[in-house]
Image (cartoon, rainbow, N blue to C red; front, side):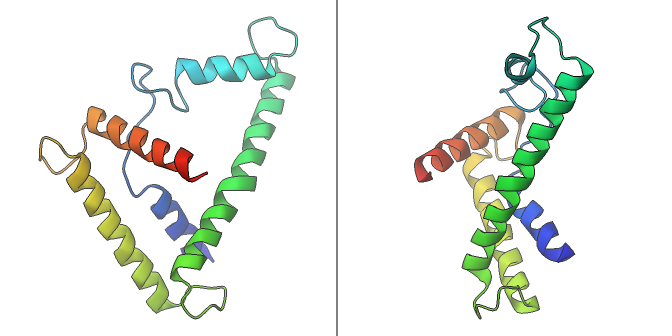
Length: 141
């Protein structure tokens, strides 16, 4: 089970996007836009900051959202794609096939987005890959 969870995490991170700590980059988990949205949603008393109770409610809501949607859906999709014998688990051969497919996808993404050809994605290239991925994801849903 640990290996399946690890592989799920690897598949989600197949395209390296880098740190989101710099607020000058596209909005992400650490950006000012994200913090403003969280404040707007959870600042119940409207004082412009989160109290301990408001902060706890925000953390609980985010933890619940992370557990509820992403992992289960990703695992389901990976099983649908790579569980060739249909037993609900991935055998060593199925895991190897999944790893090969993920490595190919990563190489394809690098070839597509590495505009300067240096073998790694710059901040701008990561932003382009992330925007393209988000756009495709939105169309699929």
